[in-house]
Structure formats: C-alpha cells, structure tokens
Amino acid sequence: MNLESPKVSVAKSQVDTFSFLSDVKNFKHLMPENIAKFEMLDEDSFVFALSGMPEIKLKLTEKQASNKVALGAVSDKLPFTLVADIQPVSENQSEVQLNFSGEFNPMIQMMIKGPIGKFINTLAENLSKQ
Image: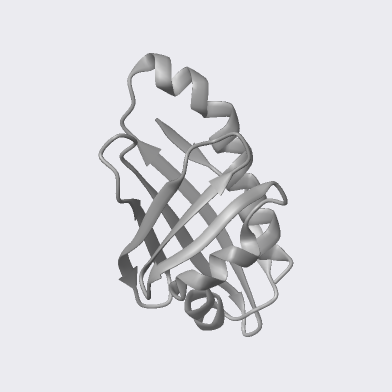
C-alpha cells in the first residue's frame, strides 16, 4: 500500500527543513491533536499513539543530505516506511511530500488506509505551519 500526502510549502530552506525532520523529537510538533502518547526512545526513535489506535514505534532509517528523511516502523506486525521528500523552492522556502509505503494483507489495508491517509496529511499540513 502506498499513500502520498499533498505537497506542502514550508517557510524554511531545504537544509533547515531537512534538519528539522532529521531531529525526530520534532515529530511531536507535527502530530494530530488526538495524540494520546509521544515518547522519545532514543535520539533516533520514538513511540506514539493516537486515540483509539495501537502504539507505533518509528526509527530514523535513512537520511540523504537535504532532500530525504525516512522513518521505519520498528514492529514486524505493521511494517512500513514514512519518507519525507524535500525539494528546494527558493532560498527560504521548500516543498515537502510525505510518502507512506507498507505491505499489509487486504483486510488490514482496508482498515488502515483511511486513518493513515488522514494521519500523513495532518503531518504534512502541520509541517507547513512550522
């Protein structure tokens, strides 16, 4: 299953946006309002839970200088990656698109497609406000 957020404009340079997303504790500022838990596990990973959903552990898995930050699920139960593609627009502006990809059975995919789509759209929207 692959989902993409709309591209959002961020009032930061590509380098600043990359630095912001590379520091995983900043994801707390991007979470939806219905977040029930956000806890740092170490400098590269965190666990979060939304109301009514199970906890999800994410770990920074890849960084490509200034243009890509990837997070991967720590659990094998819901294996997925969340990638932020960062493109420069101008000296003080960048554009970000979040891409979610995971391998799920059709039943799970049907259940999580809507909530995950809404979740990554909220992350992107909140990033545009940073």
